[in-house]
Length: 496
Ligand SMILES: *Cc1c(COP(=O)(O)O)cnc(C)c1O
Image (cartoon, rainbow, N blue to C red; front, side):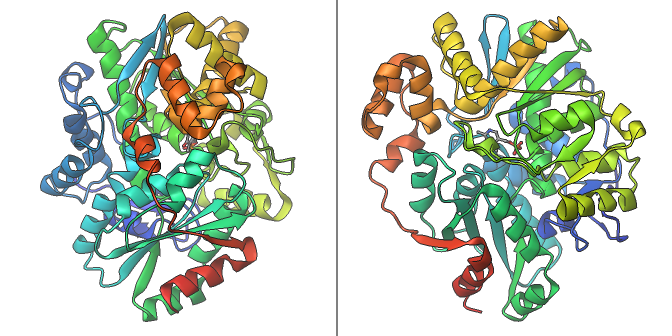
């Protein structure tokens, strides 16, 4: 693939290289960059199965990031997937009975966001060099809890970059909040907002497409970019681990090359599952992509009815990283099922922001057959944690449990017993209180420290370094604002 270009889902004609798409994050017209074609798997499954995670990542990411040289990609991938991960396999597959959990939480901040955000700073600084960018890159990010920390862990003290993170003050777990407000690095800034993730994401997107603000930044020597999954540099590294999961199943003898599997993804912003969809389009033998939501089940309703309707009550749940009503990456799927019709995609997105809903055509709805969607209530989520713990002693986090609960319901409703891989998106230590409550409500009322000890006892797993570090970490960030004050906070931090 000598040249693969990216264009915007809202199609003002902008056509950029992969490295330019990584640098910009969002297209000028407010759309998302999509590859003009999805590349095919670069080799046979049998040959790919012999590769290490890093070797596979080079091959797969190379298919998408066509203007990066092999040396550049090696530099990025070797730098990202090293001892920062606490297991050499990077993304191990854990078997519980006949179920498989793809553990994506072995990086620095113990959530799956590390899989992409450990490599994004490398992809971005290489892209800056390739494109002779003179300005300092300011990463502006809205987080539902995990992206912000993982992005800061990746970008802290990276020369030529700065990072500003907004998180919903009352919408993250205690560990998530502590991880963020104690972030070190001279180029990091964390601000809590009075509002939810959707409020933060909307304001960030607005700042990205504000031409006047862009000019002010430019004259002060800055450009914005994004570490959210709207950045193609987030999505591409996520394609790798779905393929890796399949190859691990082959190597274990659990599937024959070519045999189909189902993939279950606990979903919020629709980034992780979109990466699985890209893996399927590359030729990975996947039957159904099962989109699992918590009580904020806008996506479940969307797949059932073809109507995306965000006008509904917003709930805070035990899986806060999925408390989202406007799933940004769905726009990339809409573009795809609209037959790559950018004008139609733009019309749907305009309807969503003006009226709060849109309705797919019958033809588009028929193209959603790769997907299946379901949701789990708080009770079902807790029951899934307990059931898997009782069966095997294995402890999953609340987000992963949403996936496990939805898979169980899917199997009961469809009778489809195809072997399934569930993306395990966070370490249970990150959501210790909810996880322990599910296993043994007698643990309620324990202090944070007691909870970590409880969890070590019940799971037989020592607390990860990310938790140990919090014990002595100092609070460094105390800013709070409301949605209306976000732009002023950014300007104040940058001194413009
Ligand atoms: C971000 C996140 C999700 C949701 O992933 P999306 O790509 O936004 O759909 C699920 N679980 C955890 C733990 C997360 O951090």
